[in-house]
Length: 321
Image 1 (cartoon, rainbow, N blue to C red):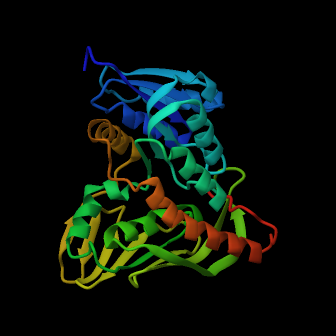
Image 2: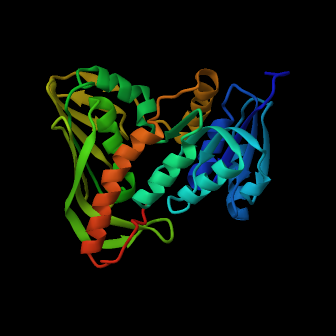
Image 3: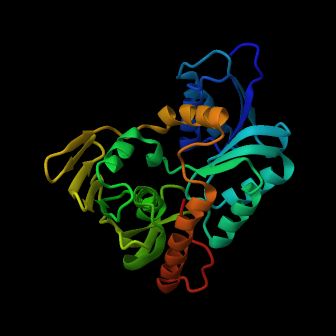
């Protein structure tokens, strides 16, 4: 798009996930001025290596920074992929010092309800703000929903081992909200184990066992992590029959034999078209910050209560990311 101004995109937090967002930006059809921000030189180096490994339009330009202070005063889009514990402060600082037209925030949004409200306040005046629970963007899941699921109560079961129940539950709670059009009203933690374990990211925790989300329309989302390394299995009970969804295998099969083929897309395949959609239409298919907080809030409150009951009665946050 020679001759047109570059869209200015800040990528804050360029570790494993942030660097995949960066790879996705390479596929944008718009010329981008991309600013990477991370205090870790190793993370910035990783991001630049991954950027060099992909080929996109030649009109993009990339700059690296160790501090938010070095960003331009006006940003078309800010993608915030730092850890959950840092996210409210980063978003608040960026909103106070820069004009940000649109936000894309990684989940988990924050580690406590106060952090959620700080993010809501900081992004409230922007043109748009969304949270990256990306199954809403996958054509495969849209086609599954179109087969008699959308707009109706669902009974979703998610089981596997070592999949990060606490930090990834929001993906499936959001999926049920999207499909059904209902809202999350309660998260039951009575099936969780009492022992919290270190998560993959230093300073954060995980827990195994079972979580159950209950929806206003009577639907449920039952999620279980039984340890080990078994891949996720999704089962979906609907008025049209029971679905078995094999995400690694790319198949969704209903009990009457109906099959919908597809696949999970990598973040590096999604971010480019996400940014294009925002720049061209002013919107996207991700949940808004308000919609996502309506899912995050009950989840964080329930997990905090469980943490207080299982060894840390004075806990004020849930360190998941």
